[in-house]
Amino acid sequence: MQRLVLLLLTISHLLDRDLPVRSEFELDRICGYGTARCRKKCQNQEYKIGTCPNTYACCLKKWDESLLNFTKH
Image (spheres, rainbow, N blue to C red):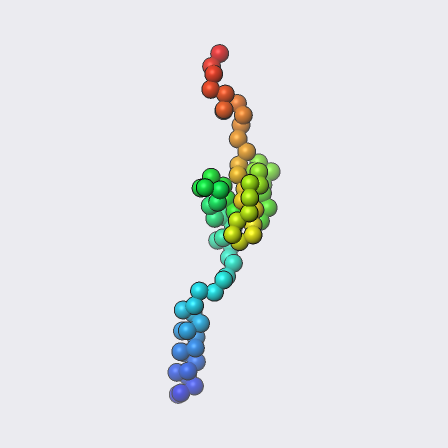
């Protein structure tokens, strides 16, 4: 009985700790002042603009330069 109580206390103590676990949920974290995403590798339509805290690339989508032309003819 004492072993079971000790085991349960140990398990609850380990579950209470914040272990540095890297999960798939960290892949799509927001970076770049909220304009980019963390990815293992940037996609074809993205630029690498930095590195995320989890050491993945911070990827920003490329934009269409024609959208930046504000003058209308």
